[in-house]
Length: 315
Image 1 (cartoon, rainbow, N blue to C red):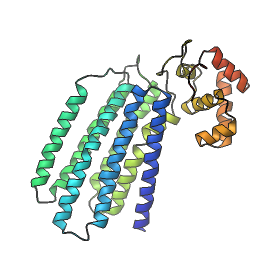
Image 2: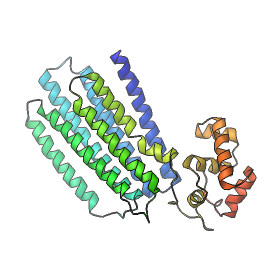
Image 3: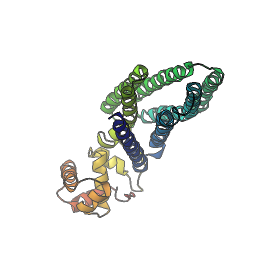
């Protein structure tokens, strides 16, 4: 039974990583690459660590533990985990960069090199200790390092998002007040499940599940639960497409529908392209008509043209 659960959680992990990276990529392509590129890189780095550093430990335990001594297994496992930590460091950096970006804060030229230097110095010291240590304590050191630094950077990200500069913030205040505590809450659940884990496999599965599910929160929320205001390039005539969506309070999913309508796609073609049901397309279209006060596709396209957004690239 436990083996089946491990397989199911692994499949779920792959699916969640795919969803998170795909949604982040779409956000970057549809809106500002400068703002959402760090989110995409965060997804790539955090899930690389997830598969290499976390699932890698599961594979090492499953396939190597029966054939090597306990001391050699512990040393090999700790070193393999340590080699995955740089991905985690870059993931933390991208999370802070993204949080600063959507909060409207200006980039600092010294932050990135300082962040990397300090974190890699600590990793070097920890790696030196692990190489010299012959007990099982390095595993505890790595776990405490993960818990402490993950909590610290998650709280920093929440702080940046919650106390953003309203005049330049990319997302609305209501969304910031939801996103900030959720980032902290998800991180606390991750760290508590890891802190409680010792030898119980089911606690390890809970940690893995929460790790992969929790890290999809940002791209999922930003794609389906909020409206991203104007942060893209403006069309030659005036309003950008994002300004148009902001003016009529169009959600990200509804903006996808408008793009494809303006590309001339039918409801069936839109449902196939966006991987949603035909009825969902019709429901979104109906809400778009209400928000923009139009009664047909032609009126919607004409409205976009009148607002000078049709010159935007909708592909």
